[in-house]
Length: 438
Image (cartoon, rainbow, N blue to C red; front, side):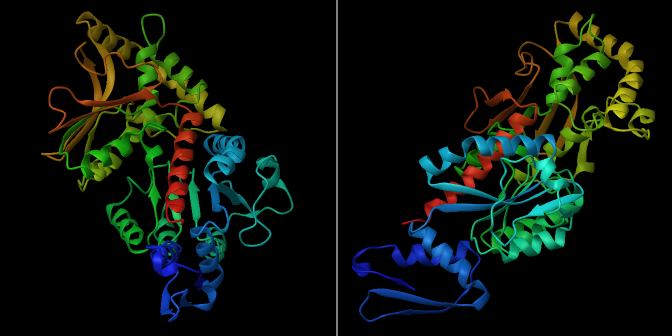
C-alpha cells in the first residue's frame, strides 16, 4: 500500500504506483482505496511481494534506482570493455543519475558466477577471468541462470548478451515473458529466424519489457535511434544506403599498390576491428545481418537469404575447416588470402583509373523490399567516397530529406566503441526506469 497526506490533491500518485508494478511484471489482483483518501492498497501474489515493494520504493524515490545486470560473454573483448566502462562510471551514475548498476552474474562460454543470494552484486573491480576460474564459479547453465533472474526481486532486471550464440538468443522470448529486459549488441536474434524474431517482439509488447540493440548496427552510432525517430515522427523512409562494416571500411581505405589486400585484412585483425572469424566480415555475412536488422526496423519481413550479397571469398576459403587456436587460424586465413591480392589489386586499379574508390556498399530499397551489399566503385559524389578507415555510414533518404539525405557517420570499429553503445543502451533503460519515479 501507499499512504500519505494530500494524495487526493496530487495527480498521478496512483498512476506512478500502478505503472511501477506493471513495469516490474507484477500482476495486481485487487485494488482498494481508503475512504480517507490517504491510502491505496493492492493485492499481489505472494511470490511477487518483494519485487512489488522494491518497485514501489524506487517509483517514489525511497531508494536508488538500481539495475540488476547479468553479463553474458563477460570475458570476451566486448564484455571486458563494458565491465571496464561500468567500473569507471559507477560513482558518476550514482551521483548524477541516482542510478546504480548491480552486476548479479557474469558468464563466459563455459563458466558462470552468480551472487551468493538472489540480487547480490558481484565485485566487478576484481579480475573477471580469475573469478570464473575460482571455486565459486560453476559450469554455464542457462536454465539455472534464468531461474536466478526470475527469482530476483529487483524490478529492473537486464541481460546484456555480448555473445554471438544462437542458443542464448533462444532465451530472449522467455526472459521478456518474465519482464526481463535484454540488451543485445549481437545480431543472432535481430537477424535470426523471422518466427523467433516475431515471438520475441510479441513477448516484449505483452510484458512491458525492453529490447535494446542500438549497438548491433554501427556500435555507438545512433543509427537505429535515428531510424526510429524518423518513422515515429511520420517521415517516410524510402531508401537506406551506406557501409556498416568497419572491417571492410578499413581494408579498402588501407589497401593500395604498396599494401596488399591480405595485409590490410591482417592490420584490421590486429586493431580488433574484425569478427573473431574474419571470414564473417569478408563473406559479407556480418554486414548482411546488420542489413536485416535495419530492414526489419523498417517493417520489411526480410531474412538473411533475401539479401543479395557479394562475398569476397572463394568457396574453398569460406568453407575451409581451419585447425589450431584463434591465432593459428587467423594466420592460416591470412596466408590463404594472399591468393586474392592480385585480383583485388586489379579491382582497386580499375576503380582508381576512373577516380573512384572501392567501398563495401549496402542498399535497402523500401518500395521494392530489395536489400543488397556488394563491393562498389564509388565516385566523389557518393557519401562513401571519403569514408575513413574505422567508420560506418548510413544515409537516410526520406520524404522530408529530399534535397540531401540525413547522414549518420563516425567511428564504429573495435570493442571499446561497441561497449560504449551497449552502455548507452543500458543508460536508456536506466532513464526509462527513473521516469516512473515521483
